[in-house]
View 1 (cartoon, rainbow, N blue to C red):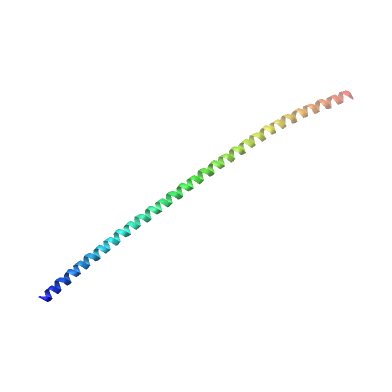
View 2 (cartoon, rainbow, N blue to C red; view 1 turned 45 degrees about the vertical axis):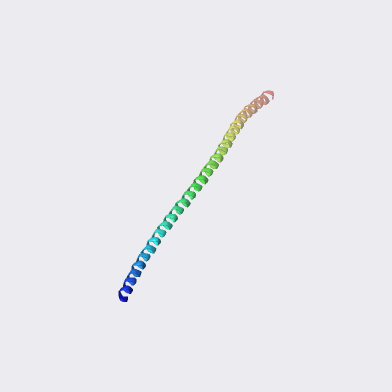
Length: 108
């Protein structure tokens, strides 16, 4: 009878140990899956933040480039106006110079 009791308790301990081992493995697998999901979410969050920051920087640079382009266009327009004005003045001066030259010829 002692043998049967020992065998029963031994088998009971083995079943209990197997059950506990299975629970430990299951818990470890669940924890690993949870950590994997957390790492994936963290990676996605980091990627989202990086993309958002990149888009903001890109938008700021575009704005800055557009502002610089407007300034350049404005300067070009001013230079074109000045050039046109100088050309008109040059034509007027050429005309006046011809008139003066003709007057000088007429006076001589």
